[in-house]
Length: 483
Image (cartoon, rainbow, N blue to C red):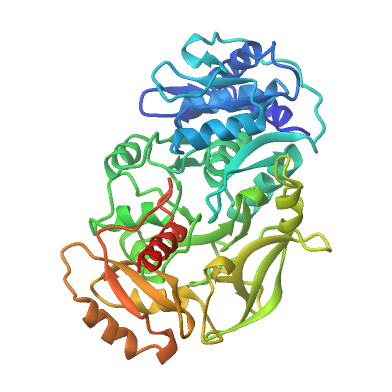
């Protein structure tokens, strides 16, 4: 089946049940279906398979726009509204979008594309199934990874449906659940958790336009969700007050993804909420979930085991202080076939025998649990020794004054590279760089001790709070150049 056929099936089966909520609007499956039908009708002049940009914040309108484009047989291109305008315009030209679904309230420049504003879309019946192949692109998402180069990731109907079904099986999520989705729909984790999984199984999805503790508090009180998907930066904000927020009593399934989850946050969340924080792992190119800790057998410090039908292996061995690791490589029905019209990047992303190269370094234990230890691009080679920044970060996070830490390599004439640590102190805490350095010297081998500790007010981050280490490396490179 195609995504559109699955949506039509769910919309008919759960017609009068609540489907989606945002801060100002709630719709049933029947009403969401009519909104999607109206979008499909508005796209009738777009050639089948044409790319339709979706430039909307997370909410009922964005959900209707996505499903309407899919149902019409067109391909929604989910835009990251936080990208710089020039990068966004460049990407729209690259994918040759035909039209953009937007809103009157959105003032961002989108070039000369014809705009269809959601306020002008009339409700309409669902169109008949478009008859697209399950292998045809269902959506195109943007990814910039750690390189800063924006690439298009076409995901097929089969890619996305396989990941939906495997995720439902792994989590036990079902039609009686209410998910609070804090991750934007343009993010692969947000699209799966807020736009696909709940809608295709008859559950409710609560969409938050922009994350803030206040917005979350209101959503918790109003909807009392059973499930929460978020990234570590969001979970950090939720535990900062030290008390379980009202409206969170029904939470039974809380999943973290999108970036590394520190063990201190994992244990702190469970202490406050009384619910395990399940860590998972995935990439845009894998639709996105690869591994997830099972609710009944979560293992701290890991990102869990592969979803049903997904396989993972390690590439060439990398010797580090924590033992032997390797590049995480993935195979399964959830893996993309390639980047949008970028054969060079596609070739580099796959091994000769067809496994997707994640660029992440990991280790797999005897029970199949995966532990992510770093990024290949972040690996520091100092005096011939491999240093994973995560090994240093894990030690520094144990200092009572350290809130966030990011370690990157800086050029060194003697050793090739040396580690530099950027540290954000906990709110209200005080510590001098030399104190934190002394703490590191007591716990790390000499060549792994950071050359320098820099206390900073914040770390550069992406839309979901993921630390952008490339920005830190660029900063150090500029300093070296000046010197």
